[in-house]
Length: 305
Image (cartoon, rainbow, N blue to C red; front, side, top):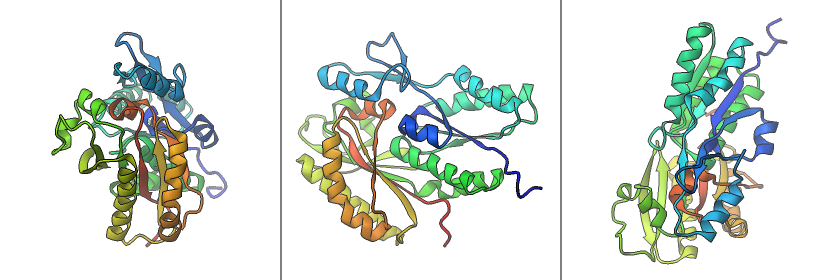
């Protein structure tokens, strides 16, 4: 009977995964949202009480206001986990890198509370070590294995194996928001006074690293393409081996132009014809400002050497 009865496995992630609601619904991903505030007092749930487009519009209209985010609470996770535990559905919960947020801590605390009530519950909480569009790609890889009928423990083991391959290469409009969010110290060499520079940033294994600077937006986008190419060379990437997407903030038209800059490389090296374009959400937007643009790449979980 075992072959015919595939157990249901519930994939959960916090709101930093930045996938559109249509996609999370179709892939049966439960999203535990972050909270966003523009005044430091009223916090609204991202995606439920505050639309991402509205978030960016407010930033663009009020460049002197620096919004903040707050992580999901223990109770937010508890409310998601409890009904699943009671019905015996195993859970894989993937959280934003712990270097950026305490979301995973909330999830772990909630899991411990659930295990006291339901000792047989299976809840695995995983540190994505990444965020935004790349976290989304990572969560989709877990869904891919679930939908292929993989068994729970094998899915957990495999997605932990591919995690270190994840990279985000991106640039931003200016460094004001990074400075304000206290992230600038991570990017050595960015002189505080040089406001006209466009930094290039790599996110890997939970941390951001400076990857150079340019003087113009177009140059910085070209540089991101080069950073991707260098990574593909370093990894000796083969077509079909990686999952890939573009992430953008406020300017969708620019993201489409960026896709044109990337499409030949991505088709030739990754074997991907249709490049996904995902909007970067508030969790990262508060640090980048309204004009982040870049790429996320991670090894496909079903790829066999």
